[in-house]
Length: 362
Image 1: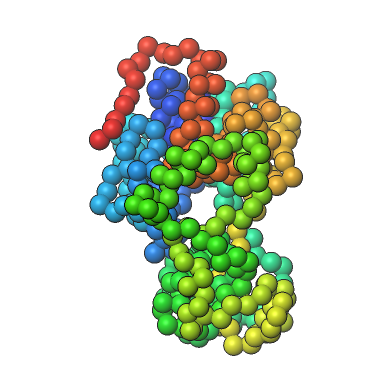
Image 2: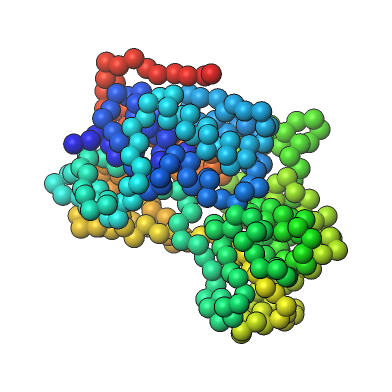
């Protein structure tokens, strides 16, 4: 039986794996993907982080590479190197379907087999079920519809006009790529043109955010509560300038559809051949509510109740959730602080075994 099973083998799960290894615990990291970094490699080809590499490191290992702002391939390579550097036990192609708890032991059911552990760390991230509005089912089948999760590049698209729905960083990056492809592009869902540059007065934006304490603001602080409930500005893309491009037409909110006609708050258009739904995700933790673990509680937003990752069910922990403690809790560079907190909490229950502590800063 394992001391811990970590469910999810991306940055959050690997960061916890580092600390569990430091504590000398018997653990296993399981992931549904077929390779380390698969969640990143499945994103669109031109994806580039808006955080400099200096601020993307997991505990114990610097993020190296020639690009100041890494792309998805750089991230996947870093995660693979992370696993190799610390010899973390990762079992791939293992999709967890349900979780049960009996007599203080967790049963992790995956791929028609059961793994047993005393504690479980849920590190499946915030991106589960793509959200697409219900009226999308009324759109003619000749119109290609893709959620941003499945968008790779413009070669997937039909020839002709393309609509991008959404106002966050993903929507803006994809909108810019499609518009640069030369096609007529419609944008729906951008409620603000507020954006922040990646550098300011010779320093990166993240240097300023860290220096001013913005990155460490707790969700429970007054300013943290304000930021948590506001849509953040797009980073690294001048949204105002982008929307002024001749081949981009800005529309109001997408409200309905019938056949080839898409209805917006301020117009109806029938020429659209492709729709990219960059409309976010809904959390799905239904697999947690198995027999014996029904004491897991959930917040109104669908995420499990926890205090800085410590769940209300004994032996259950969480990491990598949005605003679990700070804005960076679900980000590549921000997960380290939450992992350290959980590690300190776990260390109080498990005395440090007589093992050599691992460190790697190369």
